[in-house]
Image (cartoon, helix red, strand yellow):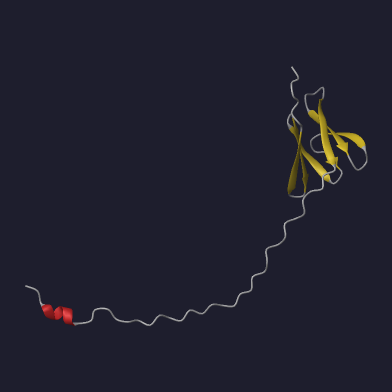
Length: 108
């Protein structure tokens, strides 16, 4: 049989919850993202050199002239990172931008 006197005692004790102190922290707003690149260049075409490397033909809108550049060369304040059959990549510091060739439509 059961000892019913066991159920006469209170088993749960009331424990005071500790007071939570929240420090007054003012958060600074996150830094603004850098402004978007102003790229005044248009990729016009590609030239394959005799050694098989590619050069990009770029229209410089600010100076109204065509320029040819290859990988590693400077284009204004940008560096040409890559030149590939699909386009080219420019960098300025830790930021990158791509100029892609428009696909040519077959008129057949």
